[in-house]
Length: 251
Image (cartoon, rainbow, N blue to C red):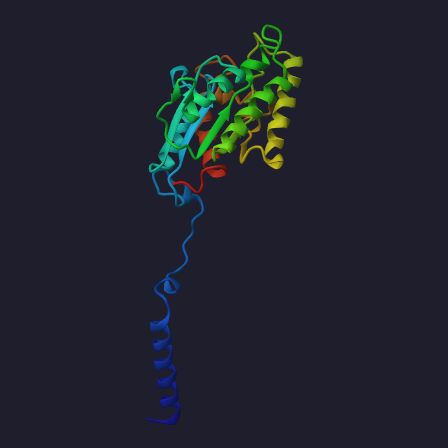
């Protein structure tokens, strides 16, 4: 064997020895985790999340709401998503039942509740069109939302805040004054993440509109056609946004 051949054989032997000494993980080819990381039913992240959703008819399954939670359940089958939506409620009513529904606290004593890791708070539209009948103002809505956000944080629960969805097509109640109040409230909700009062914000107002920012996208309106309640496609879009923005570390 020539000197050159002996040298080449020595290099090959050294390479084999180095490869054998490397950890198995360093020898595994890299794989993409882009769109597949949100495939429904695939384990995501590393922890089991236990989530309460507080809201009005857009969350209440009895009012055909809350389908965004089904999207989250499909993505994170090891986690739990409980629905505390109640049709027609204003956020002051949600605030009054928050301790009972989410924390299990009642005047009679504690009731059995899971230890929630997150709470989704999605409300405000019923208040906005009750400005005359119930004297609801953006300032009052903000105070009630702040109370719920603070109660959650005091109990170690992460807060997922949603802005009010577009409702300009709800012609029976919508007017320019209420439109301005909606924009004001939504600006305040968006600011709460930076303020530290919430952990995540999903902007349903921007997400579910197209063209006219005050109205639902036309394809989201049927079958309800009232300009306020939205269909399964919109719930899917909202659920996907929640999955990306707030629950990516769940499984």
